Image (cartoon, rainbow, N blue to C red):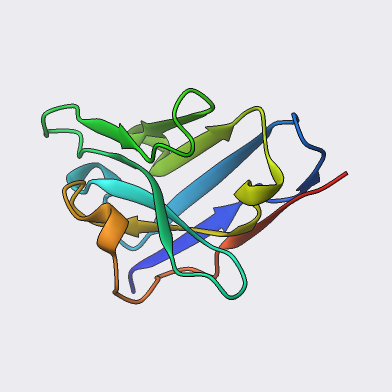
Length: 124
């Protein structure tokens, strides 16, 4: 069974940092591009960032809203991807999911999520 386990979400103050993890189960993460997608209550999904597969072109993309603040990475030996989030803003709040999705379409992902996501709340 293919599954993601997202973790690392928490409450944080504006300007703070969090590091999210996305552990893959049942498949080899390195074969896939991985995207982070967030969803806030009452809002549409928003693609946050994407990193190409290990044998891909090394492409990394970020939404304009997080450029310069978030960093995506992967550790295929641990079958895990990460999202380092710095300088957090209240508008970064939401449930964060990871998905195996081509980076050319990560910000239009309409499929089911393979994990339960992890909740990030940014408020003072």
